[in-house]
Image (cartoon, rainbow, N blue to C red):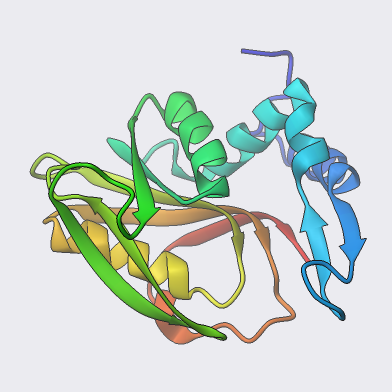
Length: 187
């Protein structure tokens, strides 16, 4: 591990959040005019910040006996693997349709501009698995809700959802209502 400050201390949490926020780059008009894109690649390039981000995302769920982390394609893979290591859990990728080689379970869901499908291997979780859903950003909540549905279809328990960034200025659906969710940074 690294010399990152312990995350149990609220001042340490604030300092970590400030450092992470400073590393997120704003890119105006990407991917289309009027969008202010939150670019996390500078944060990922700094090994101390990357570890601190994974620790902060894992921290609220350390005492929840998480057995598996489900990372949502594609940047959820980056954080999901790191959070799984932090929690001593297995990692399962939730992929776009047609990307997994074995038998899958899938769910289609609505996006603000169309629809999408997520898949996981049908044997991704053993009976009784306790799963944490991970993604880099939560916007409206639809993708995370679809991931939760997949976990539950496979007879596993969703412990919660964790995100690096929450975009609070967007209208969030009620898709995650009643679920435990945590975000490190809120914009």
